[in-house]
Length: 424
Image: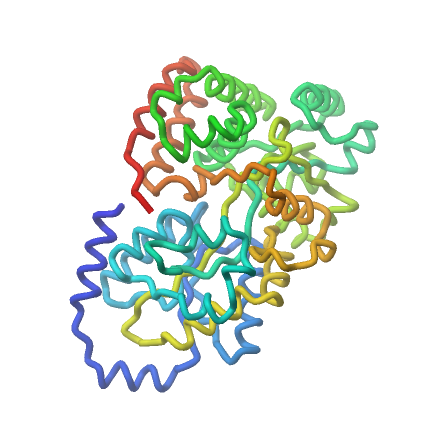
């Protein structure tokens, strides 16, 4: 991926502009910005619209360029294609390690002046600011923090069975058995590789604990992948898949959320964007569903952070791009966007009592100095596109091939993860 990004950079940086024509175009649409992203589900669409509304109040017109596709893979391809054609968007949804790839080739507009004016150093969580800081420059505007290790449960079904949400795997197994006796699928499941990886990294954090997780995912110690805790996570992953009942299929994540809402499924392990989707459909986190940490991950926050990067553009919209960063990181936009998206604000100066119960638990866990904050492997926080995809494919192969042994998959993961980490 990095080679193709560098090719994009060489093309754009060597691109000779007809300055008069570009200036005339910029004059005609000085407040319009082209935003490329992959927010296309009901809640994501509403959250993007909320950002557009906030920007409109500041005199900035959001020109939407939404690219559907799970995990943003299609959007990244479109972005690279547009850069190669000399027509990059003004703003792009770039997250995690992909940010640094684009910053390395000088295609990302630094936001140091905005960060200084808005005092991001004191307003934002240190983990968030560190994520969007690279080689001394602030390279993106953070939007919201998603919690990956979220177990959503159907309140109506659990009340009907007289059960509390499971806090341990023993309680989870009892709940699954009772749901099956009721004729309800215990756990929403999809064999989409990225969804498998999402569940696995949550199990890995719980089984391994924060210290070993850091060795596995952040420091990328290949030998650590042969640890028995990794094997236990793989065994549990296969066990959870059996709760799907019939032969599992690759289903978009919104179908699992819909099953939870319609009482067809009792539980779902998914990032809290699923909460946003349920709320977009009219479900209530106090009446219809609830959220707890996945068993074994109490006091831990497995996170993914949404960010918008301002790209170097021949349209020369730097002032407008800085205005966008100011607006989307401001308190009003933070609360409005994250209430819809299912995530929580990146700011540490908000009042948590203004959040719903699920969001408050997420925000307070992330804010607690004693909590373990762990970057997501499946959602680009701790690995580049190639490693993320290779891990997901290895896990998919393990689950869909009944003859595949956990130790074999551990060796495969160790080989994948051996790629050296870029120094930040």
